[in-house]
Length: 140
Image (cartoon, rainbow, N blue to C red):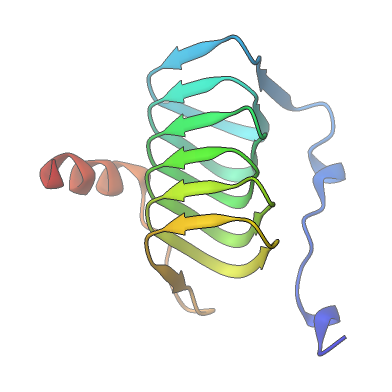
């Protein structure tokens, strides 16, 4: 509908066998870099970076840091900016305190955002996580 076939949907099947799960009672302090799927059911205090892959923050998950990945699906809490250079999906229980950068976005009624929405056009380049983290530290 309305040219939806032109837009990419998240294909999580292409990352089969490459899933990392942060369990609900787990807490990780530090930055994470990965390829595949990162499922956050617990808490991460640090930046998340994926050149290829998907970050999924469940309704019980919490991330305190910058998320940079091609595909991001949020239904929990994120305190920090989100850079989804392909697809960003916000479910009903998403709570974000930070700016969102995305090429395509889907948002369900109930999602809460305290920050700005920034559309990335086809020519926009992806800012490396190190530069984003440096800017975040300078702002503090």
